[in-house]
Image 1: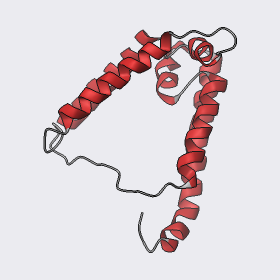
Image 2 (image 1 turned 30 degrees about the vertical axis):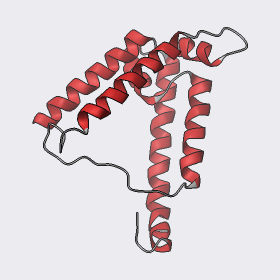
Image 3 (image 1 turned 90 degrees about the horizontal axis):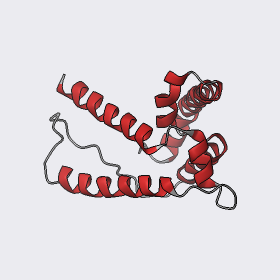
Image 4 (image 1 turned 90 degrees about the vertical axis):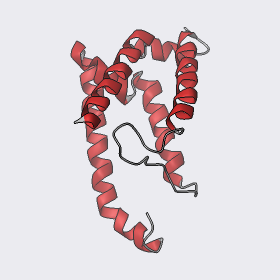
Length: 150
């Protein structure tokens, strides 16, 4: 129950931060990315604030042997740079730039029931489904090629 409560509070704080910072407004995001047009630098301050909070948050978290929920920390162990680690973020960036949404703000903005938000979330869910289908189909082959390592 503690894990669910902590997750709920973290999600609520994240959503509030997105709304207050303007990240839930796709026009604001697109204006931030339009450096030769209607450039709006205000989101740089939001991102800078997020970096500061993250920096000190990690420093605080790693002073403790485990999270408050008592479960162990789950940290990445992979050290190789794979094509999917380049292609995935590139696709994410293109989608973010074209739509003005990334998943967190899109979910936050669903309550507005705007057509653009609904289309984006539907496309995002379709993409997630396609990715899962593709991974289920091809992951066993990649796993065997690596000698069983994930």
